[in-house]
Image 1 (spheres, rainbow, N blue to C red):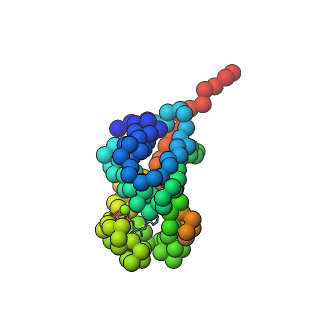
Image 2 (cartoon, rainbow, N blue to C red):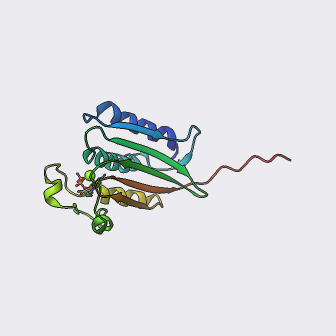
Length: 158
Ligand code: ATP
Ligand code: MG
């Protein structure tokens, strides 16, 4: 269905902000106008839930998590960035694979099955988008995904 992605994203962030137990600050860089995209709300909730859960799980005490949406010509780009341990360069291509977890020793105590990002990728692909990660070890991680978007026609002034 057609959904105002900005409101939808705010609502999901609100839920995490109310229930989080970590000492992590949230920053929102969302447009103040509506952006209508055609999405399956349940699937998109799952995508955001999986990515945001990771951002919190891998954040340090006092870290910041930043949420943003950028409008491009024919897509929007949604990003979640954290200041956590990061992902080593040589592993970054694998984090969207099923059951893949970076360095078992490092993440063992944090728990998880290694499915969250694989599911997110599948759901983003169903929507015709792409998902990717950029990261600096020890600095943090940014998970971004795109969604097809048709910019509303510009008003003509003649
Ligand atoms: P699950 O989500 O199934 O509970 P998981 O979080 O380990 O388990 P994914 O969400 O698929 O699995 O992530 C895969 C791996 O990528 C993680 O185990 C972790 O090593 C790494 N990873 C994912 N997100 C981050 C992040 N924000 N910061 C650092 N490492 C991350
Ligand atoms: Mg996860």
